[in-house]
Image (tube, rainbow, N blue to C red):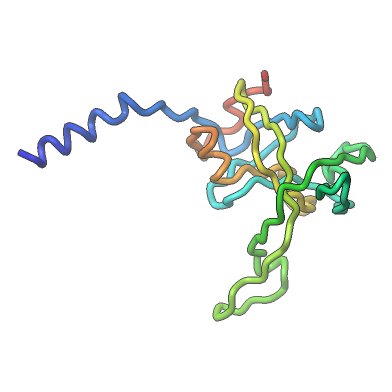
Length: 169
């Protein structure tokens, strides 16, 4: 009897949980603070969101830590952006990036500044923590990791692209 009740309870769960929004592997996302829409890769294998940036420099303003940077994307102008620094992430680097391939050692870690940004995908606007790093050697200047995908209550359909259309926030 308890097995029947358990199964009935599992079947009732979807009625209470909001259905996830389905996005493709690649989407157009607008970064509100920058006013630009960029192609993004929705990557469930990454944990955090990353934005391609260059000339990254930390500084202090009124006793708080800040970071300034320029976008490192095709067609970007020379605008210098400034954001309050939320923290520093320590990201495992890929073996081919570091040149070290030793399966018995912990992979090297790169330190990246974290800033808060508002990202618009489809008609959803979310405050997201984004780390800054030069992604010019990748195809997509914006990477959306599993934490942000979870915050969006999203599911990724890997064979689809740009299902959300242009951002409409």
